[in-house]
Image (cartoon, rainbow, N blue to C red; front, side):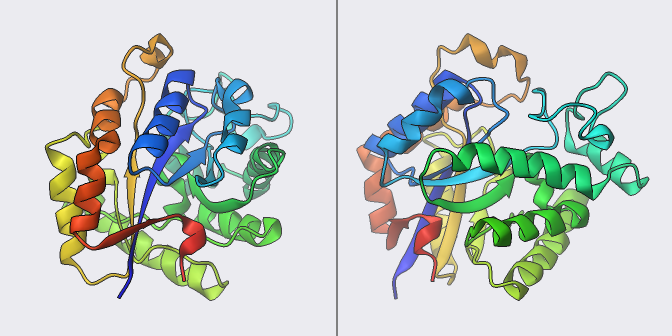
Amino acid sequence: MTRLLIVNADDFGLTEGISRGILAAHRTGIVTSTSALAIGPAYPKVASWLADEPALGVGVHLAAVGEDPPLLSAAEIPTLLGRRGRLSPGYKGFIARATAGRVDPEDLRREFTAQLELVQELGVPLTHLDAHQHLQLRPLVCGVVLELAGRFGIPAVRVPRFRSVTPAGIGVTVLGRRLARRAAGVGLRFPEDAVGIECAGALDCDRLPKVIARLAAGTRRSVELTAHPGEGDDADRDRYEWGYRWEDELLALSTPEARALVARHGFTLATYADLP
């Protein structure tokens, strides 16, 4: 039985250093796929780099939260912005607004459409959709994401998983199962298993073998590993206080040992386009 491993690097376009790191981890390592962040400050400069990487799967990292401004104006998407005219910096603020009925799905649809159209201009096939801070797990966002996948002919979506008995872990499990059912119901594909939330920004050389081994211990035929590689000397990252160790992830994902590790555990490296 062929077992597929998608290694997807998020946040292409956030900074030049992160974008270069993603491409380096693809060319010399095990990164097979990336999710482009259209609102990333570096995206206008680095977007064309993706067209030169035909073996790299390209998806869209839809953003309704974060430190960076949306593509559309406040007049076009008023319910996505706070009092200062900015997106909620994190998912908690967004969820609070959505729960209170203060987020109009039409605003989400307009902003996400603008982001999709911008990435679509590259002319490369788009393999999947996901969302910054995994907002596609939320029912309001999920509906918009699945609708847009159909409209733009995008065949797959990320379904996050989180192995934890904490309230956050249980919440991701419940919402992930619901997302998987809805995605399957409209004919979208997704990996059967995934790792990423619990090791985000900390996938170093010590942790990578443990994560791959854990994925290999299951029986799923397709799995995704979400990663965040980036160059170490990158002052543009200073505004993102996430505590990520981008350079450690780049090192872990780019070594010959990483490729050997994947092969030893019986995985074939793949993209979302390879999902059955």
